[in-house]
Image: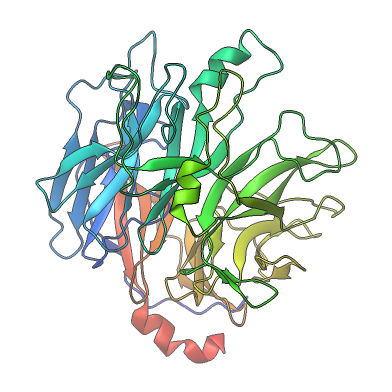
Length: 453
């Protein structure tokens, strides 16, 4: 690793005595003027948070764009907000509005809410929900989260748990609520067949599932029991081995079982047909024992095969896969034989895994990829590092601060240029609050370009 004393200046954007939690991606507005956040002061407390806000980076002005007025410790709850890539619109997790001590916020009791900042902060469920048999095509039956817009804004990916299967599993041990991934077809409205209430409601977009999950995968097979931490592949997909373009694909982590019976997390990809009418018309809404079906033409493939490694599988810290803008590489954490975690890459067509970093330390935050695909940013022991994707050389861009600032997390790159935003928890009057910071790396990376090359 090549370390250079940092000359960058960290700027604290928020300072009030409350939480300001960034999402782990798409926190910047399309013009990079605003950062979206939720009011959590604990990553695990979405069910207890009542507000979504934006802060102007230049003026530090904060605006609340969504507020719950019936919030309790049991819900409804809001959080993890993502900006649309080209419109002043956001999407975030929202707990069911009838949350109570008897039916609190949970994995299967949440949905996608969108807010239009250009239209008086009008809010509408992006996700239709129907938990009344026989269910409705395009509606979900549980809880989605971890939203990510495709580059063109036409799709939003999500991770999903199903309330119907959760209930069925309590009486039928052969059924399990297995986490999976899917996507909303933005603007394809869904009207549910069930009676409208806080459990069943219409949505502005059509939901499809995109990963096949299996209870008790066969050892040594490509079957997975869980799909999660997904990303869109490329700004416009990727090129297949035959030279044709796959216009839309979703990469995700999948849990397989090795031949020896060990759970191992590998990288998978789903290729998605171009024709939206196929995606909409070829699915069913599921049953009391089965998830909604995957659309016709969807193909799922395993990209990494690491079960025989000394340290098999994708490794912690918690991460979300990232893809290069051209779609040629999907990035993830993997532990080398020495035990150090490095960032690696695999092609969406498969093949060998390539190590990108060669550090003498393991990161302890998720990593983020710059919009131009040139740099990876991540943290270790409260310091921030950047690695050149082309050369693999790492540089220290910000040393660890003196306390009271800790809990570095949620690093985001701007949509243009090379500015990062992130969270740190600052201690004020004996209490810690997550604050938002930004770091302009444009000049720093330019001045150190020779270091990276």
